[in-house]
View 1 (cartoon, rainbow, N blue to C red):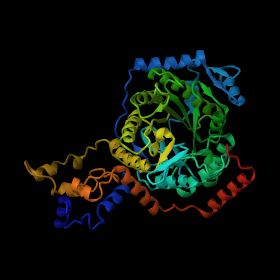
View 2: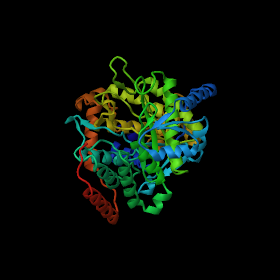
View 3: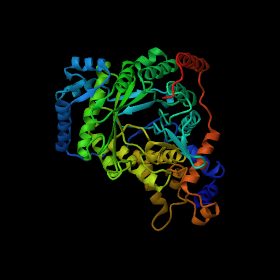
View 4: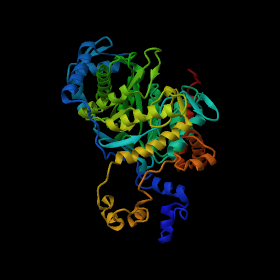
Length: 522
């Protein structure tokens, strides 16, 4: 029996064993103020601002020159070109150039903070300001686990990851395309994905962006859940759209972007810049390019519907200049994220930036080293919506079951990290010093007994036992422990209740949409 448990029992207080042991302690904590009762984090530590005013201005001026002198192409979307023309931009064919200040003026109508509503109101998230929301990784065609290895994702995998996210007290959002369910036709899988988010989770979720019609289907399904009037006045779904860097917005993305904005739903505007490929190898140049591309996309949402919520997104990455392969979780993009955070705050826009990135092919030390580097950059740069918080492996080509729960566990640690240090009489513990005095220990003090249940974050994955006990139990590494953990989570998963009439309406909508088109597999 541990010292704290022994003191609790002899003092007449219920011991950990009486409450169900270590598992019960975790359950209590995860459902308390740091867990499921906490739909998002309110930042308790400041952002880390690394650039001076002078250097921020130089980056902004470079972005303005890119916009004014080089311009951005808007392809296959004549309506977008008309909107720019009416806003005062210079349009020559598909090339659009912007005078300095034009985009910033347009962006003044964008909200600095907004709520994305969940079907369970207790799970709604606030995005912007000093709020932080963790969301699973997004977009992998493959999945992997220690049992079956790497394989194409299926709709069953997709649903499993939604269930794991729903079951984690440390994630706040159901995410979007957690993995590609390649066993469902390309032109219909968005319906199954959105339905799965609604059916198996009661958290906020993301919709499709791969075609305007699929974006509109996603929005319509959200309207079925929330009601058309409510959805028109409130954000109930996000759409993550990417720039075709360098300096191209293609019609697939702008049509989807405008569909979300038109419906008063939030588009997440994200350049994906691999330094040396889709942008310069120098950090400052890539940041300036990113600022120009993102401002243009964010501003287009405001031309479509002034006041529509929008998230200033960013995905800086490096590459191996020897092989041409992308690299993730490296220091240059991590420190670049700090600057992106400063720039987004100067625009007064919510920020999506960085995440748990790695090129590792296994949930190993390599993965966690790179993931920690980029995830700490995300929390320090002031990101409000952190996509790719859990599961990212293999340069985003694979979604890992084991890394998902390892990353979610790390998100739990970040809850405590972002809380900062609370100062009050209990935390300062002066009475404990009076009771214990010099040279004695605090194990049995009244202050320890009153606080030990919630004093420290308690990992679900780490093994803190003595070496001999760990060895006797099988010498399990973190990935193996994570393998057992995700299986247990799925076995214990319980679906949140969904109103039967809403479920039937969703299934009817899906059936009608699927019947209206032949299967397409590319």
